[in-house]
Length: 438
Ligand code: S3P
Image (cartoon, rainbow, N blue to C red; front, side, top):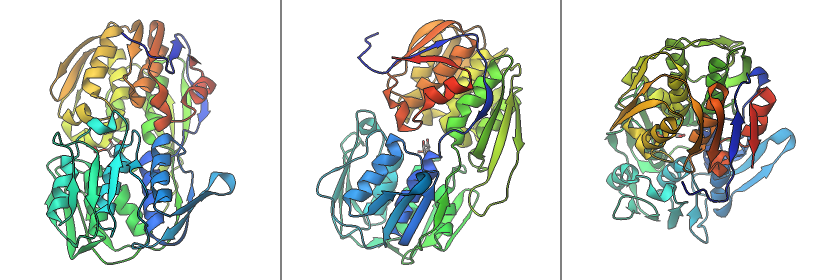
């Protein structure tokens, strides 16, 4: 393995997770709050905004298009909305770093502008598939170019008249759905997106919160172009995708009892709780206040022995980002866990099937990869060197695995943890993980 001079986590085994932890704000909701705040009329306040590289890339892109975004008191972020037609041409290409959400959602929104724009990103993002958005956007009348491999950079020509579509998505992707809906704001007539399986509905909920008429139910969303958005106050709950590492950690480490505060439990995101519970995890939902936006709860997670299961394919979209953590739980379970219907994992920040397979094998776990998933035979994790290949969630998953290993787990190439979870190692250490960073 060739280890570049990058952040490395070393985790010593034998500890447990206790106390009360609040993980940072939800990434998906933070992106959308900046985007919708920017095209709304008036001043939007975002509470609990995730100050991670991915969401900062979104904020930076809107600043480059003339939107005033500033820090307020107590960590609030203020966005001075310019209205649907108020964005200005950026002077150079918009660099969205590692963030697929920024690129795909922005592409939809930019197709409706009067100016041209180019969207690019880092080595991982410029390998990710973009035909899935270019195709429906072209159908709406947009001019969008991608590389011959179907990857970024995206070159969008403005000044096109968009028309609404009824789009049946071939893949279950909230990013594609949101991209088409955002283009639909600028299109003549109705835009309707039909999903092969329900995906996260944060865009739909937030458009409604900004006063934009939208109808949606499981697997389908519909809106009409030509309306407008009114500024709102958005409260961002803690990210269930970040909480997932702590859920698994507390489950696999004997003696653990951990409270995770104010976690977003949107029904389209809670596959991880459902899957871990089916494996035997003890996760209780406490204090569920009724709100008008996104549902939240405190989670109490207590150590519990796990058993392998067949993960129902229907649960995959609602746990799509949590598989690195879930597969660590599977490695610690008794028996076999089978994951299928998860080919989307191959086109995330890394090929997560390949990278998780290699990492678990390095830890002496018997794993077979398949085109659309993996079979994990639970066993005893051994200490190992793991290369997470720059994938933030894989870095955090193997750090948590250190709780149950028989030896140190050293995770290489962890710089990108800051794309979604700044302060991960400090928060994990405060809860009891014996982690050092070099
Ligand atoms: C996201 C949707 C998911 C998820 C990503 C965030 C979003 O991607 O993996 O981390 O905010 O819409 P897909 O919808 O493409 O599966």
